[in-house]
Length: 568
Image (tube, rainbow, N blue to C red; front, top):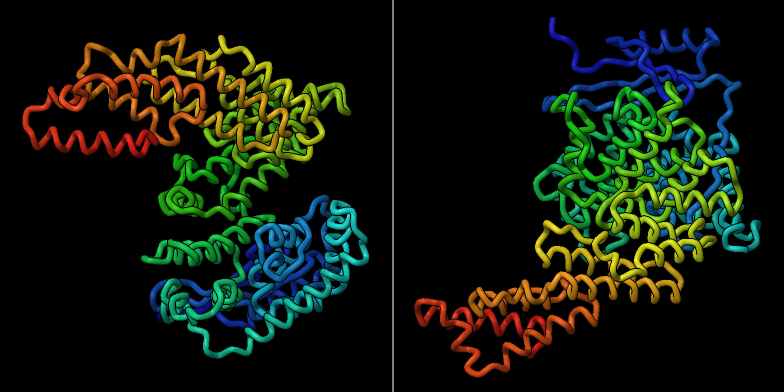
């Protein structure tokens, strides 16, 4: 006898997530088993999920019954931070708002297995949330209090404003639910569905409707990893992983990863919190090691998406999870406290990169606050010491500068702007110390690019203006010292080489983005001008080339580079 294409799972609510308890061929058997388990008083809730295997092999899960014991009331979780003031509906749909929803509604999110995107775009799910105990008013009150405190405004007024937005969100979701003209993903695929939406609509409205269609599919899946599989398949579809459609999928993938239990379920058993955090940092960059993981492992598949696509919201959510864990009290290496500092050092190392620490200022702040636990002193002196010692644990001078620049763009950094500026000046204020910022084995052009990148990062940093001006001046002096002491111009302009090669190397350094330092750039430009002014430059430039055609091509390319470098 053929196995039925549908089965019924009984899932039991355990603490903050659902656990598969049993599977039956009929809904009646599953309901009877679940109600008996609930009546026994040992579980908080049960639900029955219909698992239907489609002809194409994909599984679709639909919740057919959910029930909790009456004694179990849903409460809003305590949170200590909230996004900037939500003033419009677009703010409410934004990633920071949805991240906050995942945190403050964590108990509900886990029980219902529903993302903030689904709640905001599916009226039935939103109504279900609004009818759950006193959950929404309490959550709104907590967010309003935090926003009002940070903005220095009236808490009651902020709460009223959020409630008005909730009414607007509900009305918009109700209107979308009544629409029967929206294309279905199952019939078209994700990108074709998006393309079929009215292109004359404003971009924000078109995105909203696409999320409505996506939510209609997702609410049928009451399993986090099933949602993640579905979204991953859509992102990998031909034509889906580009532009706005990819951004829409990115937002919902981020929502799924923001649910409390998903990261742990995705990574599997970890040896320590430190190992988990290092793996999450690697995952955010698409660099998670596939060792000891199957090829079809969900973490490996998500890693591939993050490696090859711009999933900015997903990265943000993953790194925010790391940040909040670092700020928490759980040991990094519970089984062996003597390895705690070593674990911290590894996490610090994993965060560093040419664009600064992964997660920016908030991550740098979390690392300093975690390190503060190793120190005896607290308060401002303790924080000052922690900033200096964490920076001192970064061996590469450029990474150290970037870490301090990132820290300056955080609440902690704002309170210690003077301490950060002094550390930066001590690191960069001696031109003779340029050797810490270059790699002697690299070509001069690479070192110039690296120092220029650091100069640009300093110029665009959140340092106070006076400190920023001082730092860029220090980096400018480092560049000039490197060019002068290492005879960079002379090495680029080696008399033993053909004039064409010498002039091209100098011009490449003058190209936009290679040197931003005014003094350093002027040193190289002067040498280029000296060449251009010599008699018969054009003839000497091409005299090493064999024929007239190659000579004309080389001259055209040279004068094009001159124009790009601003000489003509």
